[in-house]
Amino acid sequence: MNVFMGRIKIWIECARLRTLPVSVAGVVSACGIAVWHGCFSWVPAMLCFVFAVMAQVVSNFANEYYDFKRGADKKGRVGPRRGVTEGDIKPSTLKLVTYATLAAACVVGCCLIPYGGWWLVIVGVFIAIFALAYSAGPYPLAYHGLGDVAVLLFFGVIPVNLTYYVQSGVLYETSVMLASVAVGLMGVNVLIVNNYRDMDDDKEANKRTSVVIFGRKDAALVYLINGYVAMILFSPMWKSGDFFILMIPVLYLWVHTVAWHKLTTRTGAALNPLLGMTSVNMLVFAVLVILYFAIVPVWAAA
Image: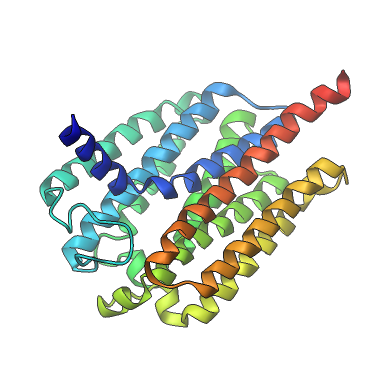
């Protein structure tokens, strides 16, 4: 039993569980807006949830495998343990599981066709390519300072707008687009923490992340700004001026500022908890939004 649980733990670490709230937050935020607009639908929302999580797991698996192949991860790294680098997982096994998970995600994605049309296949192929291209291929995005742009698009703009679309049938809505960029910026902050911690190793491996290119000081400033800009972009939701809805951005910005302070005062392995803290802050924010729009109208009607 202990051996089995140990293997499970290794694969959970490989999936990078602490970062999964990033993909979940985009779907939850879109669902919050759908509730606000009165078009929330359980089935497509849950399909989006499962697809988003699986797509991120694929990206995380691929990132670990291809970073190993490129020599970007080393034994004893300051970040979370890498199973394939440490010899806990065979590279061939990780590669097989990566593509099997990708295939399963595609099956789930196809289940959204009745809600959004056949053109979603094109979007699905685009997402699948990105999940691998982030760290694989002839021009891996993460190695050329484009990881932040990729996260903004594929963990913010695309999932939020598509999740809203398959529920509402509306392809473009201003408040949704603004929210999608906001979610993307919060997701970028998770990547910033990861790259901030790994800057020295990345530089040695010739992995030119934005932190390697611009330095830790600028990266920390961008981290702080991203959180405040995100709350401004969500401003259509705050226009009611209701006390409870206004407390959501205030709470987020307080926790966000605390996290920024920790980012600027910690180094090495001490930054690992901040990775989870940043992603959880993002998810808690999204959950509070959807709870507000789901519960307050019921109270008002009572």
